[in-house]
Image (tube, rainbow, N blue to C red; front, top):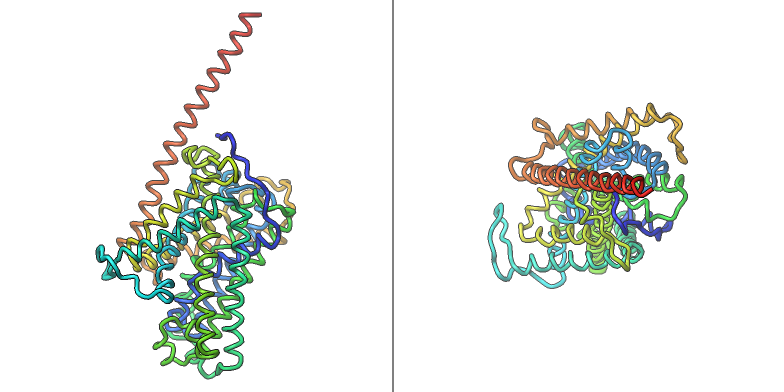
Length: 474
């Protein structure tokens, strides 16, 4: 099913596209979670976790690169899976990916007030309720909701506006990173890297590896926005791989820097380890720059995943797998307005569930990402076999080998979230988030599919009646 007024404009160039993906991959997580990574895995265990996840995601990125170059349309993975397997698998794949995108926009809406407290003081006015031992305050919730509305307005005004914002704020993050990395070079001590591993080599790597898909999922925003990217198809594919490598390198550099600046005792005492590490190396100015860099990370991740998530929802609606309401574009700015505001609304609600929601949505969202990667790998293998002559502007060398490696890697990562694994989703909260998400999606898919079929039947009947009337008149 197609909908009137559903053509997106090509407005993104090379720098815009790279900033969009890289900015998504280096959000707020590196500021608040690096201490946890080092504590549970050791310095080399944490770096190994990101290298292992990065290796798998580079292979997945190669598969995306070939498929995105062959089918540069909004919706990304949905298009590949639709061509390979049909509507139901395509919907499950894309809806899982949207779960990942939406979980990050909600994550950032909850995280924003935490950062704001460093500038304006505690947001603890108007106690509402307590969730998982975390008090929720009206001022905290309103701050997060206000941020969601601002990012939503920015996206409605056009992808070029959103991309310009993304580029500028990504430069702020890079400046903060340079300060942290150079601080470690001059003030760090290699002896602080001990312990290298906390729970054995394998256990340490796996402990961090399960967090990586949520933190590095931004590369697949490129194929989601493919209809708005003004680049040759082959270059589009290569950019995906560049984004994955850059993201993995960033996280490893952050871990190495913080590990060198803090010993175990200093790390345990740090409130925000990356910020405090820069403060130890550079004084007050280092602390301030890293806080600003963390805030910038929230904004780039939030903005980029709203772009990707809204395009994925738009693409599903365009194909009649979600109600046509989500495929409507703004008459002036040519953006999927209804999809943007729906995701924004979820971001407005998130802060009112408290800080514990950060953990719940990050874990549930990670499952969504790896499920989508599993479907992409399957689609790659299927299309290599069923359509060997399909035009592929960028073709992965030894494609079937990398397809199988990507499939096994995605399958292995998926298993990390299942019961019995160290990274299994927690019952009931995290499984409830994932379960309700898919339940709503399946209901919307069935409704939209039935309505689409009914409209096609009516259209066919009308067309048949018109042809019969012409024959009678003749």
